[in-house]
Length: 286
Ligand SMILES: C[S@@+](CC[C@H](N)C(=O)[O-])C[C@H]1O[C@@H](n2cnc3c(N)ncnc32)[C@H](O)[C@@H]1O
Image (cartoon, rainbow, N blue to C red; front, side):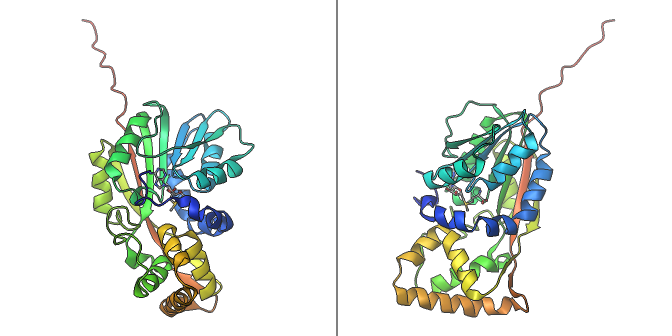
């Protein structure tokens, strides 16, 4: 399996299930914009890669209507199980275990491909983007969302930095290949999408703020969701975990308000198209 290193997100599937309300709340504006920019039409066929809990796939299914079709997918079996639960009873949605590198699906069969908060985690984004391009019909649309830089995402960095300070570093730097912030530069994201053969590439940034009642709630939520970081913290001794929690609380204190912790977040949404079908030139007969 070619995921974030070899990390299987099944390990945090129960955390994603428990915190799906928080995840969707934080990404509400992001999802709204992503859907608006995709401009899905009734009858469209949509593939979602790395679909996590399947909550966005449910919105995609609503957008394409009963004539349309959505395939929600993920490489992690635990996430695929969550998607089955989320999409149960929807006649226009199905679930599949797919690796974004090589889906094995027929070329040109989708009007839109969506990958929300997953492309930056793979170690070879150009290869995944070429696969997305292959799967799209002519004039098909791509929508990819990734995290903006660490300086814009204290909801994550307060915990990540605390883990690092206590020696719990998992994998390479978060800005390196497969890291959470590896596609955080809009110019890099735009280039990598264009290089895969897409046209009309547009990158926009969007705010993903989150609120927590307390520093403990913040720490528990992030460590339930944060993939490899969650695994590193879970594997640490009780004393180390307590020390990381305390350091994270110190770092997040700067974001305390009368309403609890208000932590900023920012993501990039990139939309693009495959080339339109060539127009036939009609030459009038003399
Ligand atoms: C941070 S989670 C995001 C989940 C969901 N898209 C969301 O925005 O809430 C990243 C997801 O991408 C999936 N993923 C990582 N590498 C993948 C790959 N090569 N193919 C398909 N899915 C992958 C993970 O299993 C995980 O479910």
